[in-house]
Length: 129
Image 1 (cartoon, rainbow, N blue to C red):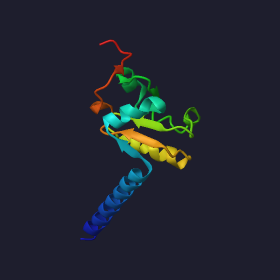
Image 2: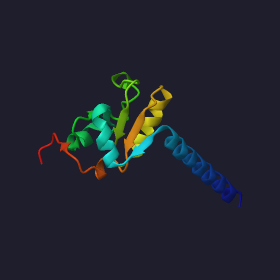
Image 3: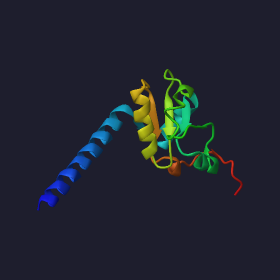
C-alpha cells in the first residue's frame, strides 16, 4: 500500500511539472500557424533545432541549423534584439530551445505549430534521394 502512495505522489509530481512547463512555454513562446510563420520568418532569425542529419534530410529554405544539443554553446550566433523563429520535427524540441533562450534574455520567440513535418512550403535538402 505504501508503494502505491509513493507511486501516486510521483505521478502527481510528474503531471504537475508537465503542466508547469506547458503553461510556462505558452507564456514565453508564441506558436504560429504555417501561414503566420511564413509571413514573418524572412524578417527574423530562422533556426532549425533538429540534429544535423535531420537538417540535411530537408529543412526550410533559409534556416540555420543549431541543434538543441549545441544551443548553449552556440547562443552567440543568435541575436537577442531580433525575432527568433524556431522549429524542429514536431514542436517539442523547439519549445525546449525557447525556454533556454528565454532564460538568456531572448524575448521575441516563435515556433512553428506542428513542426517541420507539418510544413508544406519550399524546402532544401542536402541528401540525394
